[in-house]
Length: 56
Image 1: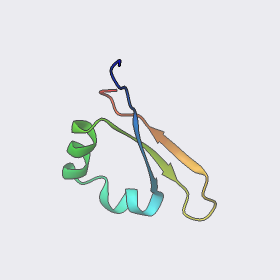
Image 2: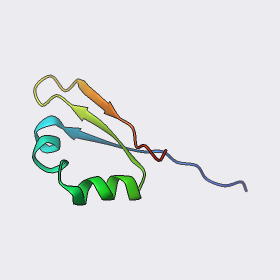
Image 3: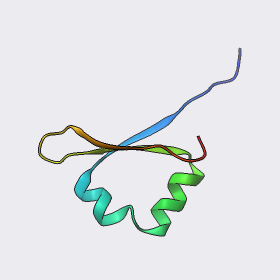
């Protein structure tokens, strides 16, 4: 079998992103684990922003 390639994407409500993801701990964790973020509007449930991991 060949290698497995996966891209991690985490969908996060905008309020949670604003409250927690500016914290350096979260920023470092996102980089280390190569996680991409979809920031979702809390009311409309539509994507507000796509934040790709710079390492991916």
